[in-house]
Image (cartoon, rainbow, N blue to C red):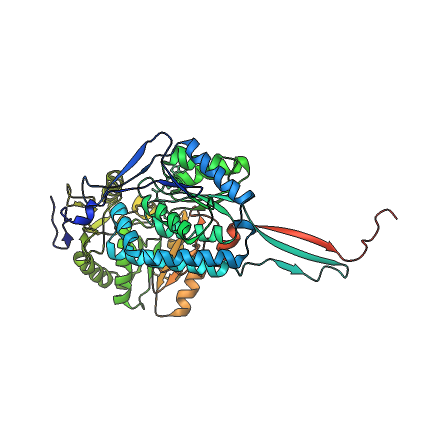
Length: 506
Ligand code: NAD
């Protein structure tokens, strides 16, 4: 077993590993198992061999039952007909309950995903804020009137909920991603069936249970657990859903886009990324080095908005890399349950192997491996060392493809034009960062970068008010802010004639 001084060996005697929670799906307000009785066991990625959660393995029929419940709740239930004020009150109550359960939910998230417990606490607290923001907006949603289309005509634009929404989420931020979608969908009057990742389903079930406890009516927020096929696929294919909102890989997103196109169903896609971090010579290098480390190592690099491509202006490359390497050698990684841990585990054996194959490809392509590039603590859990490459060129796979691990690829540029061109030389367009003390230069660069979520002098920052989403292969649609509500709304135009209409025949 390779041991590094900044590696925190997992403590297999931690009593919190004994929790072994057993979950049931939530359908029409009731906790249910799969009709077959089949289950899925989750082993902690941070603690080899320890089962930390068990949930149902839903069949296509189990999912159809949940869709039928959401359909009834939408077509005949109280939720879409309630005032925004009433919906808002129940959603605020859900936010309060999430806040009251931060410790419990953070522990589940840490055990199932392998993320550091301190990070998980911050994420769950942020989710309460996402619910609160959406709750506030839920009573402010409006349409439009057009009083300028003629003396005897008035135009009304009604905002209506799109209907039953199937929401499919990935494993890296289960509670955040569900909290970025469910409150926006139900806030406008939709009903939902959420299918979390088969790796990490516990906290999504707890979220729905808390919403039920808050008084959100039966059938409005259902959760089914199971594999992508059949559970996720049925959500996209079944005529009972009016929309599918998917977050995950380009491979599956493309497939769901095709399914939705065949039935002309609305689809939202939030897919992968290869975020550039541009560092200009005039940047605050101390802050930039810290931000680059955070941007690539956060959640062990398993983050769609990771800053995994460092684009640094030539003259400052060595000094910036020296500082970054120093941080990378010292940053604590390992046991997710240790309060000092900054970087936790990889999600699965297969994924850790995939990350390593990218590192091998980078070396074979001639990039220089400055640090890391190896599994650590093998046998104890799934850990990968912070890894830094320099001498990367734009054609290498480590510059182009989403590695989804703690692996940084460093490229250099001379001018701002070159930096922007390199940033845009990607099939993805999810996020981008610019580090510079010249705000004009930073803004002009960001304006030319084709990415949906950008930062100046920071990275992986977020607020419920600002939209997120992808350009190019990173996806379709926008979540959060006011824009997120449009995603789950239909707009109906009503032409009102005031007085007698002009005769057509005579
Ligand atoms: P994934 O595509 O393998 O799985 C995502 C979800 O889709 C899971 O719930 C899975 O069960 C389900 N699924 C799989 N096959 C399906 C099918 N045939 N039909 C319907 N559903 C199916 O992705 P993942 O490995 O869980 O997550 C990693 C990917 O997600 C990365 O590419 C990452 O960039 C992306 N991601 C994007 C965002 C964003 O907001 N843009 C956020 C987080 C993750």
